[in-house]
Length: 114
Length: 109
Image 1: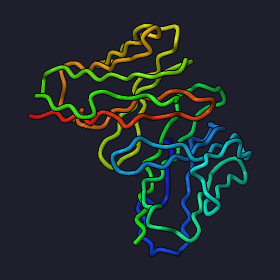
Image 2 (image 1 turned 180 degrees about the vertical axis):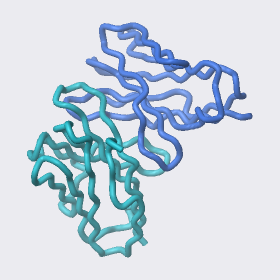
Image 3 (image 1 turned 120 degrees about the horizontal axis):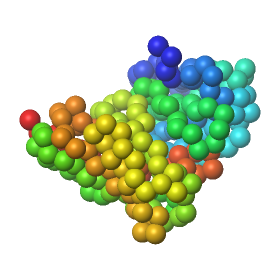
């Protein structure tokens, strides 16, 4: 399978714990995106990488959130001191070099904070 | 706001009927994309239409774009139960996509 993969698919954690999600983009795509989606809403942009450089961060990405893409391949999204409001689907997408190209989404990681 | 707004928010039709969803926006765009999301899953790209295009087809899907009215429509012909999903239009904002709340389409057998 050469699509975008995300791990884990589901995560249940207690408030105050840290969680980390992983995204593996399509191999030849140099752009990688993180979105968050709450129930009944469309995805909201969180952050974007071109290769290993994090080029844009949304104001939604509080200090408790950090994303990395150390070698320009896979990416991780960490949430520290989780809160119940962090419960959502976290989606990763990748796209080829050219701006304005289609973004290909992974299956998402569903986070539930108790 | 760069966000597109889909209309209707929910649509329920019988299998075999056509389904039409609309997207309105307020800013100028380079392109507009339609995505589908089955319940609890990731998004699947359907069609990208550029600002200089008026209509595109893909199988049973037809997308139109009217930049003068700042609106787009997605038509699904001969609907099937498998078309039951949420459909989102998205605008290209610099590098990121900006999504509306979507249209929840239900196809009844």
